[in-house]
Image (tube, rainbow, N blue to C red):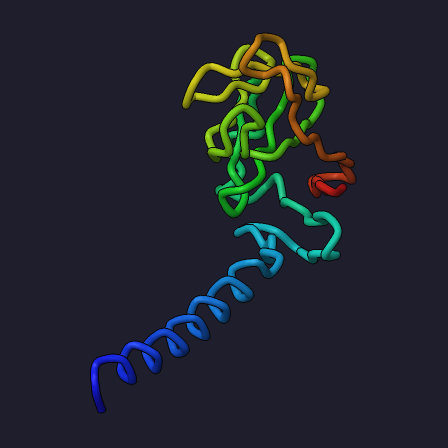
Length: 145
């Protein structure tokens, strides 16, 4: 096999490997957090539950506390005692750095701020933030889109 034949074979194999990796990487992530029950992914959104009695979710017992679910969703307890949820991916720069701070969503990477409804509060937050619904039933908190 000469160099040209080798490169052609390598190119085809590399293209196949990259295509397979991309297609696998583009699959929807299964949001099945630890301490959850009935975790499902509809393909169009999220739908999972958190057991508030689970020690992994202890931060949700206090206003201002929050937990990260599968690295992509932040669930918190607002100062009025309601539960709120948002994507961790900041709309300013696509980094998973959003958390709950001072009763607003805050990106630690570059200071983007959002109100609890996802509306931007400064220029870095001007594109808004994806917010999820929450529903409390006894000690089970459902997060869904």
